[in-house]
View (cartoon, rainbow, N blue to C red):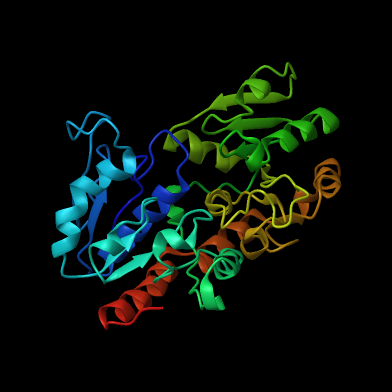
Length: 341
């Protein structure tokens, strides 16, 4: 299991959807009796029933390569292992270099990565929205298998009673909808807590001067679980309803939505990318085709009609780690049998 190059796995004290997916998958496969070797940055944890191979420590490691970035340094440490590995390699990295070292590779891009970086081979998608995008940018409109992300709901606290604030939890950036969330706070007066990694909207939100806007930055796993357990709803205006077609940012899944649902927290999302696949409109939240619709949902307190119990059940039944593992095991078996797609 090749984790992303940039951050440790699982995430601690930062928002990291890809790292969460890799960790839950590694743990889930181990619980099913599979031998999982996780290749990840220092600071990562050893998966239960598995093993950990640590890669580079900092920008000066390995030595004498001043022009190497995270991709090259990560690759330096896993190259020999992957060449000799007698099993299946699941590449979650940005570099996607494992395919050059071994034929038994499944490749999962965690954003709209150019399919050429994967040589159009053994690509998987986290949603049908992402699969459509990959097909459009691949030759022959090839078939792309879809395996939805899963979540371990036991990491999150369920509370049936919600407090009177909305939560924005993502990169604090325009492409994730932070600007529209701030606009909603200004125009409706609702309480919004902004949490997550710094982005191009951080300074503006932190210094907006609105008493109903609270910026708390990156938080620990414990604080994250606490916020989701108390928030009235998660605001997820990802993509910010741009005029571009396709949009400037395509939300290929939006893992934070699962974190909210697992906590019993409804989600108010844009209709960007995979959001309608994750959030069943009117059942566990609302899918809003434009800013005015999201503002209407807030002003009319529509989330009062959403059951926290239904949200938790939706996450557990539709997006479990067990289902994610089953989906990938099917693909691992195909690769082990010499098949490619």
